[in-house]
Length: 135
Image 1 (cartoon, rainbow, N blue to C red):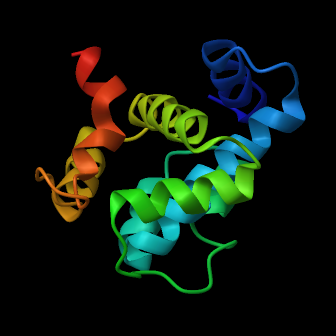
Image 2 (image 1 turned 30 degrees about the horizontal axis):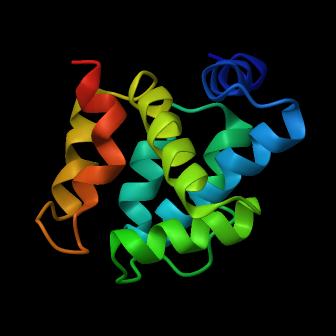
């Protein structure tokens, strides 16, 4: 999948009006995810993505491996995307489903293993709700 196909799939699934809004949602989600996970894991996850998309997980992030919970993730994505937090959370879930379709299953499992799933605010399982619905 190339950049246009990736952004087109996200735009279609999110029903966003234009490419600008779509790219902003992808950038917000993947940059914030790249901040949360270690640099090597971000590079592994990004390896199968289009070059322009890969950059958001790796090149655009200067401080990998930060510790923050799901709520902070949503707040950061919302701020970067200039979207309501509920919309930003949904966008992130759909974008993760598109990412999952492009990366090796082992890399995606590694990502899930890094993000704790619990009943409190650390519940990163929320990020994978759309992925899990499709299985």
